[in-house]
Length: 148
Image (cartoon, rainbow, N blue to C red; front, side, top):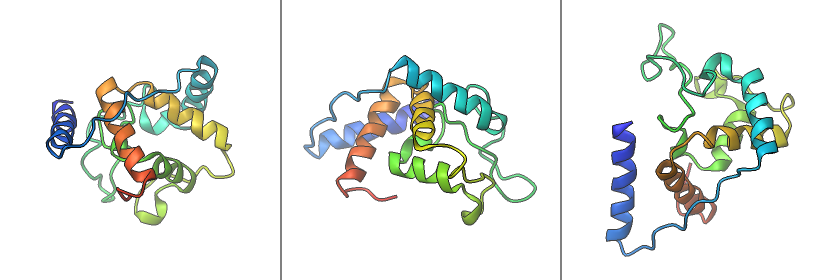
């Protein structure tokens, strides 16, 4: 977690050094119905691999015997927040099998609303500074400034 916080602080400091405006405060989806739906979808479809609180399991950052990395935490303590929303949605829909991972694709199994609610739920677990850094990454990606 310390590395993550240092990365966020470094990113924000560099943005300030470049004369860029700090991103506006990120607005999370806090709709209780959406978050309840996301929690339920996550519990039913994702928790077996990512943990019941999106915390993953010990050793997620090292490849297993098969050479593949275990599912990472989605609670803001790993790299998921480095990816813009379109990447998160695509990963959920397509999975990671084609790129050497173990995650199955959920396209056709989860609705777009279910995917949006699930992302809103696990993002609700992220500390404010992580969410704000993610919102800046997402904003830049939408403007074509950052790829992924």
